Length: 303
Image 1 (cartoon, rainbow, N blue to C red):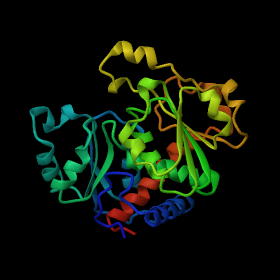
Image 2 (cartoon, one colour):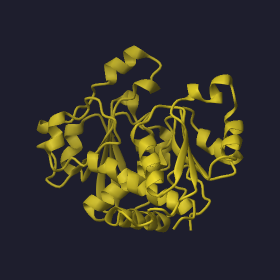
Image 3 (cartoon, one colour):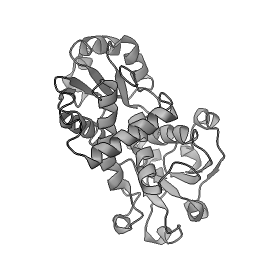
């Protein structure tokens, strides 16, 4: 069904296709030997022009667990991009070596551009402050596993909503599900872009106070203020500690609210929250490998 398809934005797959991916990911978690050698002989190219831990390693772990192999680079200085090679040429060349490409790039639209020149499927692992669709797959699977369904939820997004590509992708994806409402919590300087809000077909409010809305949330999605997106160091320092989730704030929340975070975190979630049963961000990171296994097996035609 997904064989040969690109994944560039959170709306590229239908709800039915997402449901099938999540079912496959859950089976892969339950049955470690299922599809174990299904991608044997396949090569995945991981092209990371920006740093990554979870996304890159979870993709590589996913491919290896499926029996395939990986090649690529973890920073642009080790590629011909350092010599000025165009992204289009990189996509053409790498697609002659690999069966699929996973790419992270600091420029918005880079994955879409690469997909137009590559001869193999391209998966967007983050393009600047735009989108991060495989993190969204991880987030949706986590919500499904913890809450039982992706519906009838009030979701709060807190922190850097201007540059937070994980927020942009998840908000857009969640707006396709029934009876979702959203709360955007940020300082005025880091509010969600207008083009993202314009694409939402679901109710939302904006506020600068987490305490004002946390009691009504089913899900709280925390994000870090991203130093790498700021041009002004003073502005970053002024905003970086705008919101810190701690035990005191957690006492205001529902007993069954869950806390998600795409990671890495800095100090926006106090370590004391890790012991709270509502903290789901480490489980969230683990689910990322299974959903990426499901994605790779599907687009490579290994299932």
